[in-house]
Image 1 (tube, rainbow, N blue to C red):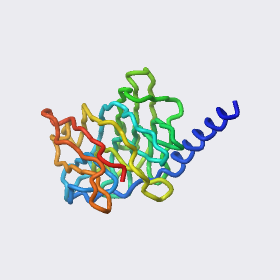
Image 2 (image 1 turned 180 degrees about the vertical axis):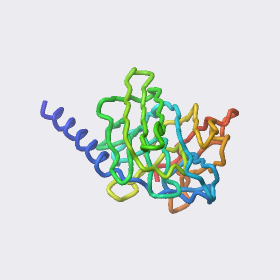
Image 3 (image 1 turned 45 degrees about the vertical axis):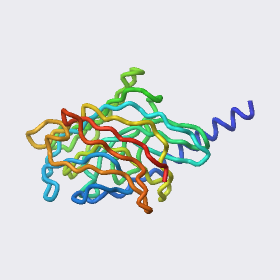
Length: 248
Protein backbone atom coordinates (compact mmCIF):
# COMPACT_ATOMS: atom_id res chain seq x y z
CA UNK A 1 0.00 0.00 0.00
CA UNK A 2 2.85 2.37 0.90
CA UNK A 3 4.54 1.79 -2.48
CA UNK A 4 1.24 2.38 -4.29
CA UNK A 5 0.78 5.70 -2.52
CA UNK A 6 4.32 6.77 -3.39
CA UNK A 7 3.78 5.79 -7.04
CA UNK A 8 0.50 7.72 -7.29
CA UNK A 9 2.10 10.73 -5.61
CA UNK A 10 4.94 10.61 -8.13
CA UNK A 11 2.48 10.57 -11.05
CA UNK A 12 0.54 13.49 -9.56
CA UNK A 13 3.77 15.45 -9.11
CA UNK A 14 4.75 14.66 -12.68
CA UNK A 15 1.47 16.03 -13.98
CA UNK A 16 1.92 19.15 -11.87
CA UNK A 17 5.37 19.70 -13.35
CA UNK A 18 4.04 19.31 -16.89
CA UNK A 19 1.05 21.59 -16.36
CA UNK A 20 2.89 24.37 -14.51
CA UNK A 21 6.27 24.37 -16.21
CA UNK A 22 5.57 23.36 -19.79
CA UNK A 23 6.31 26.61 -21.60
CA UNK A 24 5.73 27.70 -25.15
CA UNK A 25 8.77 26.98 -27.25
CA UNK A 26 10.21 29.69 -29.48
CA UNK A 27 8.76 29.48 -32.96
CA UNK A 28 11.00 28.73 -35.94
CA UNK A 29 11.50 31.34 -38.61
CA UNK A 30 8.43 31.32 -40.89
CA UNK A 31 10.52 31.70 -44.03
CA UNK A 32 13.55 29.48 -43.39
CA UNK A 33 11.93 26.04 -43.25
CA UNK A 34 13.85 22.83 -43.12
CA UNK A 35 15.06 22.78 -39.52
CA UNK A 36 13.71 23.63 -36.09
CA UNK A 37 15.02 22.99 -32.58
CA UNK A 38 11.58 22.26 -31.14
CA UNK A 39 9.09 21.64 -33.96
CA UNK A 40 8.37 19.07 -36.61
CA UNK A 41 5.37 19.49 -38.92
CA UNK A 42 3.69 22.11 -41.08
CA UNK A 43 2.67 25.75 -40.88
CA UNK A 44 0.45 27.60 -43.36
CA UNK A 45 -0.65 31.19 -43.91
CA UNK A 46 -2.08 33.42 -46.60
CA UNK A 47 1.51 34.35 -47.49
CA UNK A 48 4.71 33.16 -45.83
CA UNK A 49 6.36 36.60 -45.93
CA UNK A 50 3.47 39.04 -45.61
CA UNK A 51 0.63 37.04 -44.01
CA UNK A 52 -2.81 38.53 -43.56
CA UNK A 53 -4.88 38.16 -40.34
CA UNK A 54 -7.51 35.93 -41.88
CA UNK A 55 -7.18 32.44 -40.37
CA UNK A 56 -10.59 31.20 -39.23
CA UNK A 57 -10.18 27.51 -38.40
CA UNK A 58 -7.66 24.70 -38.04
CA UNK A 59 -8.34 21.02 -37.35
CA UNK A 60 -6.79 17.55 -37.54
CA UNK A 61 -7.11 13.97 -36.40
CA UNK A 62 -4.32 11.75 -35.07
CA UNK A 63 -3.75 8.58 -33.07
CA UNK A 64 -2.24 9.22 -29.64
CA UNK A 65 1.29 7.78 -29.88
CA UNK A 66 2.68 5.18 -27.52
CA UNK A 67 5.87 6.27 -25.82
CA UNK A 68 8.75 4.28 -24.39
CA UNK A 69 9.14 5.05 -20.69
CA UNK A 70 12.73 5.66 -19.57
CA UNK A 71 14.51 6.60 -16.37
CA UNK A 72 15.24 10.02 -17.84
CA UNK A 73 12.21 12.32 -18.05
CA UNK A 74 11.25 13.05 -21.66
CA UNK A 75 8.39 14.91 -23.30
CA UNK A 76 6.43 15.23 -26.53
CA UNK A 77 3.26 16.99 -27.63
CA UNK A 78 1.09 16.83 -30.74
CA UNK A 79 -1.05 19.87 -31.42
CA UNK A 80 -2.72 22.34 -33.74
CA UNK A 81 -2.87 26.08 -33.34
CA UNK A 82 -3.74 29.49 -34.74
CA UNK A 83 -1.11 32.25 -34.53
CA UNK A 84 2.30 32.10 -32.91
CA UNK A 85 4.56 31.77 -35.93
CA UNK A 86 4.75 35.46 -36.83
CA UNK A 87 3.96 37.08 -33.46
CA UNK A 88 3.43 36.41 -29.76
CA UNK A 89 -0.25 35.48 -29.79
CA UNK A 90 -1.42 31.89 -30.06
CA UNK A 91 -4.31 29.62 -29.25
CA UNK A 92 -3.51 25.91 -29.39
CA UNK A 93 -4.68 22.50 -28.18
CA UNK A 94 -3.48 18.94 -28.39
CA UNK A 95 -2.23 15.84 -26.62
CA UNK A 96 0.81 15.16 -24.48
CA UNK A 97 2.79 11.90 -24.29
CA UNK A 98 5.57 12.02 -21.70
CA UNK A 99 7.78 9.79 -19.60
CA UNK A 100 7.97 11.13 -16.03
CA UNK A 101 9.63 9.29 -13.14
CA UNK A 102 9.89 6.22 -15.37
CA UNK A 103 6.17 6.04 -16.16
CA UNK A 104 4.26 7.05 -19.31
CA UNK A 105 1.75 9.87 -18.89
CA UNK A 106 -0.86 10.86 -21.47
CA UNK A 107 -3.06 13.95 -21.35
CA UNK A 108 -4.91 16.57 -23.34
CA UNK A 109 -4.50 20.32 -22.91
CA UNK A 110 -5.06 23.74 -24.40
CA UNK A 111 -3.12 27.00 -24.19
CA UNK A 112 -3.59 30.69 -24.93
CA UNK A 113 -0.66 33.04 -24.47
CA UNK A 114 0.39 34.67 -22.22
CA UNK A 115 -1.03 31.99 -19.92
CA UNK A 116 0.42 28.52 -19.28
CA UNK A 117 -1.12 25.46 -20.85
CA UNK A 118 -4.07 24.00 -18.95
CA UNK A 119 -4.84 20.26 -18.69
CA UNK A 120 -8.25 18.97 -19.71
CA UNK A 121 -8.98 17.15 -16.47
CA UNK A 122 -12.36 15.92 -17.71
CA UNK A 123 -10.70 13.70 -20.34
CA UNK A 124 -8.54 10.62 -19.86
CA UNK A 125 -6.72 9.48 -22.98
CA UNK A 126 -4.71 6.37 -23.73
CA UNK A 127 -2.21 5.32 -26.38
CA UNK A 128 -3.76 4.55 -29.81
CA UNK A 129 -6.89 6.58 -29.02
CA UNK A 130 -8.18 8.41 -32.10
CA UNK A 131 -8.35 12.10 -31.26
CA UNK A 132 -9.72 15.01 -33.28
CA UNK A 133 -8.93 18.61 -32.34
CA UNK A 134 -10.35 21.80 -33.83
CA UNK A 135 -9.95 25.52 -33.15
CA UNK A 136 -12.45 27.91 -34.72
CA UNK A 137 -13.20 31.62 -34.65
CA UNK A 138 -16.98 31.68 -34.15
CA UNK A 139 -17.46 35.43 -33.84
CA UNK A 140 -14.91 37.79 -35.37
CA UNK A 141 -16.51 40.90 -33.84
CA UNK A 142 -16.19 39.70 -30.25
CA UNK A 143 -13.10 37.53 -30.85
CA UNK A 144 -14.88 34.40 -29.66
CA UNK A 145 -13.07 31.11 -30.23
CA UNK A 146 -14.13 27.51 -29.84
CA UNK A 147 -11.74 24.68 -28.90
CA UNK A 148 -13.00 21.13 -29.35
CA UNK A 149 -11.22 17.89 -28.49
CA UNK A 150 -12.95 14.57 -29.09
CA UNK A 151 -11.76 11.01 -28.48
CA UNK A 152 -13.55 8.66 -30.88
CA UNK A 153 -12.12 5.63 -29.06
CA UNK A 154 -13.41 6.46 -25.57
CA UNK A 155 -16.32 8.69 -26.55
CA UNK A 156 -15.03 11.53 -24.36
CA UNK A 157 -15.04 15.12 -25.53
CA UNK A 158 -14.18 18.64 -24.43
CA UNK A 159 -15.57 21.98 -25.59
CA UNK A 160 -14.25 25.37 -24.55
CA UNK A 161 -15.45 28.80 -25.68
CA UNK A 162 -13.38 31.91 -24.94
CA UNK A 163 -12.62 35.39 -26.18
CA UNK A 164 -9.07 36.01 -27.35
CA UNK A 165 -7.26 38.58 -29.46
CA UNK A 166 -5.35 36.43 -31.95
CA UNK A 167 -3.14 37.61 -34.77
CA UNK A 168 -4.82 35.02 -37.02
CA UNK A 169 -1.71 35.01 -39.20
CA UNK A 170 -0.93 31.28 -39.32
CA UNK A 171 -2.18 27.75 -38.68
CA UNK A 172 0.01 24.82 -37.63
CA UNK A 173 0.04 21.03 -37.26
CA UNK A 174 3.00 20.10 -35.08
CA UNK A 175 4.77 17.53 -32.93
CA UNK A 176 6.80 19.47 -30.37
CA UNK A 177 9.71 18.95 -28.03
CA UNK A 178 8.29 21.28 -25.37
CA UNK A 179 10.19 23.49 -23.00
CA UNK A 180 9.94 22.34 -19.37
CA UNK A 181 11.01 24.68 -16.59
CA UNK A 182 12.75 26.87 -19.16
CA UNK A 183 14.92 24.04 -20.48
CA UNK A 184 14.72 21.71 -23.46
CA UNK A 185 14.41 18.14 -22.11
CA UNK A 186 14.90 14.95 -24.16
CA UNK A 187 12.25 14.19 -26.73
CA UNK A 188 10.01 11.30 -25.66
CA UNK A 189 10.41 8.18 -27.79
CA UNK A 190 7.02 8.07 -29.52
CA UNK A 191 5.57 5.75 -32.10
CA UNK A 192 5.01 7.15 -35.57
CA UNK A 193 2.38 9.88 -35.45
CA UNK A 194 0.18 10.47 -38.49
CA UNK A 195 -1.95 13.60 -38.82
CA UNK A 196 -4.99 13.09 -41.06
CA UNK A 197 -7.89 15.30 -42.15
CA UNK A 198 -5.70 18.37 -41.69
CA UNK A 199 -7.82 21.36 -42.63
CA UNK A 200 -7.82 25.13 -42.31
CA UNK A 201 -9.94 28.05 -43.37
CA UNK A 202 -7.92 31.09 -44.41
CA UNK A 203 -9.92 33.93 -45.88
CA UNK A 204 -12.55 32.42 -48.15
CA UNK A 205 -10.62 29.19 -48.76
CA UNK A 206 -11.11 25.95 -46.83
CA UNK A 207 -8.80 23.07 -47.63
CA UNK A 208 -5.91 20.86 -46.61
CA UNK A 209 -2.35 21.99 -46.01
CA UNK A 210 -1.52 22.01 -49.71
CA UNK A 211 -4.33 24.52 -50.38
CA UNK A 212 -2.16 27.26 -48.85
CA UNK A 213 1.46 28.45 -48.86
CA UNK A 214 3.18 26.15 -46.38
CA UNK A 215 6.50 25.41 -44.73
CA UNK A 216 7.66 21.98 -43.53
CA UNK A 217 9.96 21.57 -40.53
CA UNK A 218 12.11 18.72 -39.28
CA UNK A 219 13.39 18.60 -35.70
CA UNK A 220 17.12 18.88 -35.03
CA UNK A 221 19.38 19.52 -32.05
CA UNK A 222 22.60 21.51 -31.59
CA UNK A 223 24.89 18.79 -32.91
CA UNK A 224 22.81 18.62 -36.08
CA UNK A 225 21.29 15.38 -34.85
CA UNK A 226 17.88 14.88 -36.42
CA UNK A 227 15.41 14.04 -33.65
CA UNK A 228 12.23 13.66 -35.70
CA UNK A 229 11.39 13.84 -39.38
CA UNK A 230 8.28 14.95 -41.21
CA UNK A 231 7.03 13.21 -44.33
CA UNK A 232 5.88 14.95 -47.49
CA UNK A 233 2.14 15.58 -47.68
CA UNK A 234 -0.14 12.71 -48.67
CA UNK A 235 -1.85 12.60 -52.04
CA UNK A 236 -4.79 14.74 -50.87
CA UNK A 237 -2.49 17.32 -49.29
CA UNK A 238 -4.12 16.90 -45.89
CA UNK A 239 -2.03 14.23 -44.13
CA UNK A 240 1.55 13.62 -43.07
CA UNK A 241 3.59 11.44 -40.73
CA UNK A 242 6.09 12.36 -38.02
CA UNK A 243 8.76 9.76 -37.20
CA UNK A 244 10.84 9.71 -34.01
CA UNK A 245 14.57 9.29 -34.61
CA UNK A 246 16.48 10.28 -31.47
CA UNK A 247 15.82 11.65 -27.97
CA UNK A 248 18.57 14.30 -28.16
